[in-house]
Image (cartoon, rainbow over all chains, first blue to last red; front, side):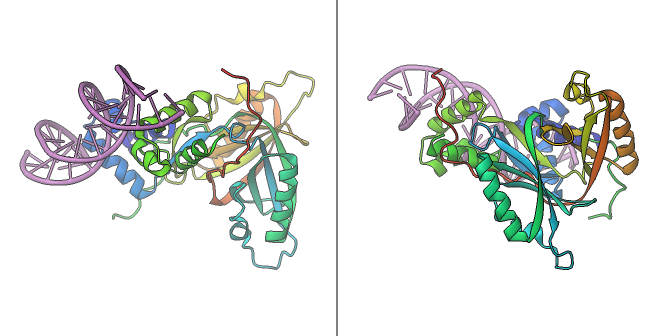
Length: 157
Length: 157
DNA sequence: GGTGAAAACCCACAACT
DNA sequence: AGTTGTGGGTTTTCACC
C-alpha cells in the first residue's frame, strides 16, 4: 500500500469519524480525491467497517475473559465457530496453533453469567473449556502502524 | 443505561459513521436530541472513540499472536504495560488471573518479525513469554449486545 | 431533555485534465 | 487518479419549551 493510502487508513483507524475535509487537509489531496480513495479502500476490504469503541464497564459487561476450547471428540467435524456464533457474549473467535483449537474473547455481566456462558459454549460446540479471567486492561484496540510493503502486488483488477 | 441510549450505542458500535440524521430516524428523536445524547455518551466515556476496522492481512500485518508474559523476577515492581507500550505491534494488553500476569495481542508482518518482537518484549519488561499463534479468525470485533441494567446509578454530577 | 430552525460545514457527483 | 465547482444533505448551535 502506498504512502497516502497508509496515511488515510492510519487516520481513520485512530478517528473513525474524521471528516473527508480533514482527511484532505492531512493528506494534501482534494476532498474528492480522498473520498475516492476511502471508497476504494472500503471496497478492497482494507477498511472493513467503522465502529464506536465502547466502555464495557459502562454498558454492564464488566467481566472479560479468554476461553480456550478443545473438542471432546477430535474426530468430529470442527464447526465450533458457527455453532458458537449465536452467543453474543463472544466478541472474538480465533483459531490457534497449540494444545487447544480456539481462543474466544467473551464479555459478560458477572461471574454467574460467565458460568452460564461456559455451559452454553460446552453444550453448543461439544468442547472442554479453559478460562482466563481478565483483571484489568491497560490498553486495547490500539491502532496499527502500517507497514510500507505489506505484500507483493496482486494480479491486476 | 436507558433504552434510547442503549439503542444509540448499539447502532454506533455497529456503524461508527452513522449520521445523526439516521440515528434520529432509528430512535424517533430529533436530530438535535440525538446529537446531544451522543455528545453526553462520549463525555461520560460510554463511547470511548471511533475506529475504522482494518484488514490486517491487507496492511501487511498478517500474523496475529497472543503472547502471555510472566516476570522473571516476581519481586520487582510490575510495570510491564508501560514498559511495553512503545511496541506498536502490541494491539492490546490485559492483566489476567492465572499462572501468567498479562496477555498481549500482537500483530506482525512475519515469523521473523514475531521473533524480533518477542526478544524486545522480554528485554523491555524482563519477562518470559509463551506465544500462541493465530491461524485464522472466524470473527472478531463483534458489537456488544447491551444489557438493560448495567449498574446501580452513580452519584450525581 | 426535548424541539425546530438557521448558519456553517461537509458530501457526493459531474465535467474535465 | 487528480482537480474544481455546485446542489443538497448533515452538523452544530441557539432560543425556547
